[in-house]
Amino acid sequence: MTIGLLGLAGCAGERPNNLGARDGILAVCPSSPNCVSSQAVDEKQRIAPFAVSGDPDAAFARLKQLLGKRRDVTVVEESPGYLRVELRTLLFVDDGEFLLDRSRNLIQVRSASRLGYSDLGKNRSRLEEIRRQFMDEKGK
Image (cartoon, rainbow, N blue to C red; front, side, top):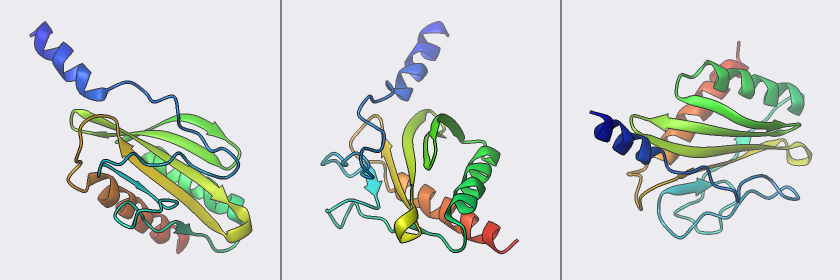
C-alpha cells in the first residue's frame, strides 16, 4: 500500500520554478499540447483571456474568491494582480496562472500540466469552466 501511495504522489510532479509574470508576460508554453495560454503564439495553445468590465481590481478579487470556492484549486502564490494556483484532477496537478492586465481590461490566463505530453484538453476545458463561472458571478 505504501508503494502505491508513493506512486500516486509521483503523479503530482514538482512545482515548476519558471512561472510568474515578468513585465506582464506569463511563461511560454512548452511545445507539448498540455498547456494553454492567452498569450500563446501557437494557435493550438491559445485561449482567450478573461474579459473584465468595470473595476479591474474588483473583477480580479471576484476571480480570487471564485477560485477559493473550488475544491480543485489551491492558491500557491499571490501578489497584486497575479495569482498562481495548483489545479488538481484526480491524481494529477496542473499549474494555473491569472494575471490582471488593467490597461486592456483583461485577465491573462495560463494552465499547464506538470507531467505527461497530452492532457486530453483538460487545461483548456477547466479554464473555460472557470471563465463561465467568472462571467456568471459578474451578473450577481
